[in-house]
Image (cartoon, rainbow over all chains, first blue to last red; front, side):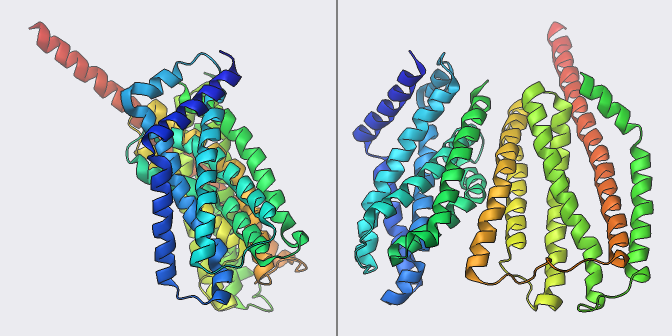
Length: 225
Length: 242
């Protein structure tokens, strides 16, 4: 098997498990709905106020649901010692990492796409014209979250209190993604000219590149045993 | 095992570090609290700078040592380097917390608020969170080798992240409100600089001294545990013989 095949098989495996159990995506979506509901209870918002805070609420919901998906990504591998089987794959460990990143990215991105219309309806947002730009923001931020999140999902899966430790370790490290995603989303939703939030997109690209490389490299050390 | 010898050799000068720290800190405190004039704008309040700035510098220095040590550990897998990493992380966390605390005390009279989402303040808070996460992670891993490896990975990822966090927070703040305080354009006179220099050197020496003592302590603790394990297994073996 070449490394590319390893990536493909891991993505395929995660997709098939998800199609059969429908555990991850459905729990992510319902959790996000509850988060949205609680936020709308906590602030009584008119449309003007909603436009100010909606990007923040959106990314809090996405980050929390993302953590649910990321946590499941490796904890399901504990059953039947699948993790050990993965560690025995003769190809480079980086291939497993990339496969898992791709699967996690796909789950998170799908959930975000499913949730966005809910935000539009529940918070009476005006329908955005530049939907492709918004998708670009979602794409870049989700790549960053899944690149570093997959590393920490693999790292926390073999320790005690893993459900607590994943967010505790991950959230401080994704502060730049959260700031950049919120600012860029706010810009697109308000219909600002691209030049006003361009720097946030650049920051997201830099973060994605840096942390895909660093996590790819560090993943070797997580898996070796 | 060269690093062992290097650490042993440096450890022999432990007392010099401690003594140097005491001398520098006494000199710095004297010059800072008594010898230097009060600030034109801030008055006597400015004197907390002589504690705050060296604390902040030293904690950043400590995190750099942690990252280098972690890289070294992943490369050579030398357990004493891991003891050093654990020691430096705990000390950096303490120094970062103290820097934040003194910063808040300084902020109250000068900015009239304990807390503001200033760029440096925010990135130091994130730094503290990463360090506490590091220390927590270490307590949750049972196998010592795994504990060291996972800690090293977190430290390296965090070290790469820190400049990005700093820049993103800085951009974020400058977009929302004008910076609350700017050091640019303010030239520090030599009356302030000399005590600051003494305090910085003294604080780094103090940090190094504490680091050496703590590393040694953790190293001996590990040896003790290994010995205890050996003795216990011998005891059980001799019992099963008879």
